[in-house]
Image (cartoon, rainbow, N blue to C red; front, side, top):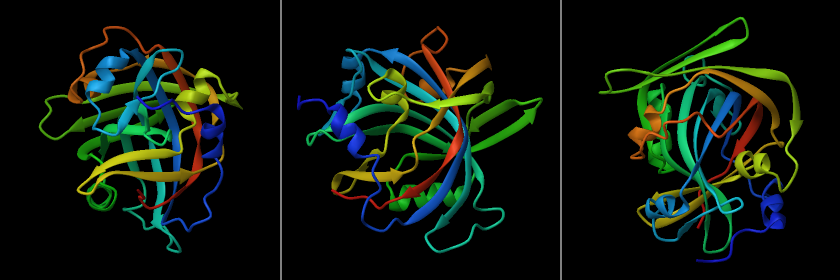
Length: 245
């Protein structure tokens, strides 16, 4: 297995690329639910050319529900009814043979069919159409996701604290949240995509309801325990770049 990324290489990808981005968007009210997972099991799910990224020997598996806002191509304004929707993804953390650290998505549920088609067609990401809702009551977000054909919705109820801070480089929170690359399986092999945003303002999150169903849909077993690490963020503005080799 190639050497794992260094802290310097992880920090380097926070810099804005010199090439032009293709899309702008904002991610809001993010909830990061992470479970420690067996690294060998994660590795067995990855395509050739990708390697599980670990923190102090542990691999991590995550469910991340959030709001997608103002999605639009570069130089275009948001479009009402199209540019705002919900997303819930199941992900792990990997690096490639070059030592580039990134995200591997097992699924990305979304309630905007055009967004699903666009992401699957141009970014080769495993987006899935789903019925989703998110309601805010007294500062608490009630988030539901029901993929087509599933008998019941996944349910998450969470609250994100107002006080926040930037993750310390080298910390677990930094390892889990500060990811600026994604990898996708394309007809031409593994390709790498990049996003740019300011570092997350991370905040404590309280979890009143959670559901392991997205992990089961991704082929994993029920962890039968609450997440090992919970954190949230109010959001970031994001620039999205095209896939490269």
